[in-house]
Amino acid sequence: MAPAVAASGDRGLKSLVWQKLKASVFDDCWKEEEWKIILLDDFTTKLLSSCGKMTDLLAEGITVVENVYKNREPVPHMKAIYLITPTAKSVEGLINDFTSKSSSKYKAAYVYFTDFCDDKLFNKMKSSCSKAIRRCKEININFLPYESQVFTLDVPNAFYHCYSPNTEKTNDAILEQMADQIVTLCATLEENPGVRYKSKPLDNASKLAQLVEKKLENFYKIDERSQIKGKTHSQLLIIDRGFDPVSTVLHELTFQAMAYDLLPIENDTYRYKTDGASGKEREAILEEDDDLWVKIRHKHIADVLEEIPKLMKEVSSKRKATEGKLSLSNLAQLMKKMPYFRKQITKQVIHLNIAEDCMDKFKSNIEKLCKVEQDLALGTDAEGQKVKDSMRVLLPVLLSKNHDNYDKIRAILLYIFSTNGTTQENLDKLIQNVHIENDSDMIKNWKYLGVPIITTRQTSRKDRSAEETFQLSRWTPVIKDIMENAIENKLDSKEWPYCSQCPAPWNGTGAVSARHKPKTNYSEERKNSSKLIVFVIGGITYSEMRCTYEVSQVFKSCEVVIGSTHIVTPRRLLDDIKALTVTKSKDMVYFKDE
Image (cartoon, rainbow, N blue to C red; front, side, top):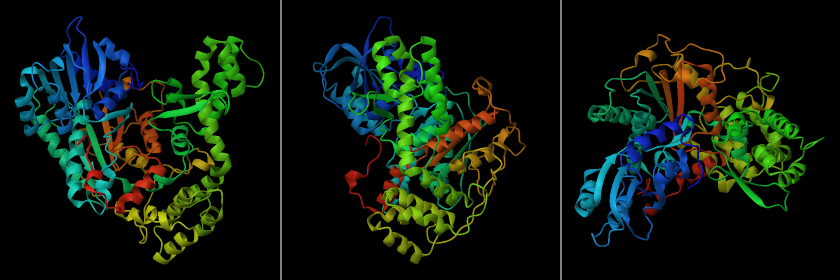
């Protein structure tokens, strides 16, 4: 199992999910001095890895973790826990393990479904292996806690289903699945929120909001264990991805967003070498179990580069291990000689490597690009002067040989967004002159997200010109405006209609809008407070995730949680946008664990 956040750690959603798994699964089938095997499918492997470690499983009497899909050696003297999604493939895996009493792989089965199991699947399981099953329960956890205040539904293919012009028939099915998953999030948070949605320009948010509201009502009606009957002091906002196209393509200079945009980080794993190009490759998991990562991930790269060497020098001076100027090569040599010192500075070295890798990319070709992007996105330069000719700002980027097609397309999109659309003639010239005909759908297909590329539109933003910021980081994601306006009861009810009755704290009285200065530890203050849950259909960015924590630090009376179908980087989103007009064969269009 991949390393993950310690189950015992106070990490918000991650800790909450682990505690629910422990109570619903492990405590439910616990027996003193009895070891068990646990069977997982693809989704539940991610679920368990996101909130627990192998040591946590050992503490719960689990000795072996197996994949329910794969062929395994029988262990007939041991009982098995099946933590699986209620899908045909996963249930088939369970049934195959108990085809007959003589060939059963395990002594007994304790079955726990992440969500509601339909009658057809349940009856198939019942008729095939009911004698082997000691327990069969639905635990209602069908989402992944990515960070303490961030969750995903782990359905990246939902982007294609929701926005492609080729998938009208599958759109409703994916929305149904997403609604079921969101309800399990609310159940885990023990909330029955008032549901609102962004009314235009598409109807995905409206459809999903109606489904979620209906399913919430049914869930709390039939859930006998729950004490929740009416609406709780929480609000759920559902938004289509097209609400803020700028934040998805802009180069971000805060540490986490910058690293995931510029570096080849896959599955939160960063690979690096401590002894230069000839050194042995190492890898590090970027996760909340690393306190230094949590401390610096939302800081501007300039602050990170200033802070890490200070921390390293502090550790070094305490150990009297080094003198003079610090460098990665010097530290690498010291780490070899001093095991204790190595443990002290490993994390600092990892993050300094990431920061230096980011700066190498930044200095080579991103720095000038960032100034252009900020000017286009805001319509003003660093001195606050209005940009009079956006094309003149864009042109140097298009003419430069240092920028690849992705960067040029990102700049063109910012130009189009900043001018509220462009003419067909102008768009054709841009595509032809920059030689991006093969990737032109990365621009044109934004129309399927409700973002006008050819027409015009006007939008207004909250004035943040007085806020202190770096010149190359002046843009603020629109999600931050939405969160702040929601908490302060300033969202327009016509633009953000309710699907249900409005919970008391959100009825316009301003009951939840008290502001406080940020404190070091604020989690205790919000244990019984209102919650704002924001869900974006089609992906969230790392900068939008950062906004969740920033707003939570300012508004002590409201805990903010953000989620989406998946998490996107600019490059990945552009690839997904391009693919919207590709007709996929039936076997390429799939739902989770189908």
